[in-house]
Image (cartoon, rainbow, N blue to C red; front, top):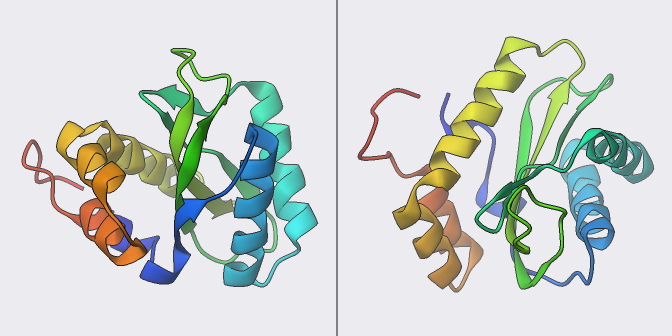
Length: 155
């Protein structure tokens, strides 16, 4: 699975303004509603329910909030670089500035897990995150997010 299958340049927010984890998720839910045509409230509630199970802040300033929606017909990704890092209750207690949102259909099962693994692999790459953090616009960020990783050719 390639991240190009989940993302478009239009689903990237280059300077998301948020003062908290909840506000960042709210802003991403609003953008996800535009992209999917689903209710912003439904997306937001689904993401908050998932966060209550445990933070999706995976460390190194990265969070991967995700959820499954019954009326969604495909995997959908959104990415945001926050203007200022926010506390996300991350595993390493570091504030988060890079957020990759993944939404999946209710029955996505293995595809959902494969997509999460692919996102994590891409964002674990130091060159990718350094490039994204230094990028000035969504198009440049998109390039880093979809670039093949030197460490593995497998998707």
